[in-house]
Amino acid sequence: MRWIDREEVAERLTYEVCLPIVREAMIAFSKGETLQLLRSILPLGEGRMFGVMPGGMGAGKCFGAKLISVFPENFAKGAQSHQGVVVLFDPESGAPVCLVHAGEITAIRTAAASAVATDALARKDARRLALLGYGEQAGTHARAISRVRALEEVVVWGRSVERARAFAAAMGKELGLPVRAVETVLEAVAEADVVCTVTSAAEPILMGEWVRPGTHVNVVGSSFAGPAEVDIELVRRSRFFVDSREGVLAQGGEFLRAKAAGVVGDEHIVAEIGEVLAGDVVGRTSAEEITVYKSLGHVVQDLACGWWLWESGE
Image (cartoon, rainbow, N blue to C red):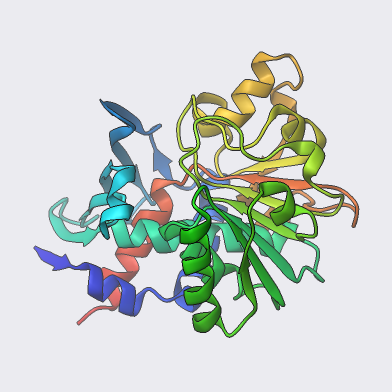
């Protein structure tokens, strides 16, 4: 069995490679060509959890699972918050053939999925990106979004202004763009064209009344029922898209809060992003509307990326 470590994933799974892989995986998912179960999450206390995500890419294609732990405090210690493996099985023999570093795949494919959604839903003239959060996903999202829009400025907010400033300095140097830290979420999103929420917040940090018309928002940080990064008003105001309808109806914290409050029903979910990418559903319908993409992350993204690494490797 081959082991593909973090360094190899980071070197080979570039955004130029990953964006089309994720795009095709989500189209296949929404067309019903893939197989998957809802993720199982085992709470470990203190914000920690262990997740199991099984799936298959369809008849005659690979299958497997992602086994992932989430320890949010790891980032402050210089380690990844998501750690684990993607296990790949050969579709012909049924034998396990490869283990892939799940933390690095998760970091890259999550941001790639947001970039694919941004390309489909954000205004074509979007130039200003706001990042709410300064952890690992903030960095990957800045890199990925810059592949689909000609960014002119990035603004970052986080609970520690000092850490936000440090992130801004490093990211500005890497991207060759003006990146600045601000002290409030309102200031961060006031002139943003694209907003990415990539925090571990348990309660909403982004209010719908703060989001200006025409903005696209990627809601990424919360991946199970309970925590919510954005408030009910933003869900209500937006043209709302998801990676998985079934997943969000069971585990999408922001949507479930709005539904429980009686503000929206299941029909408020316009479509899965794969339906938009396939051309079956219109994404943005006007320059003024607010679009939201709720990302839980999906195992078909992990399997597709892992199998590409396996098949294209030496």
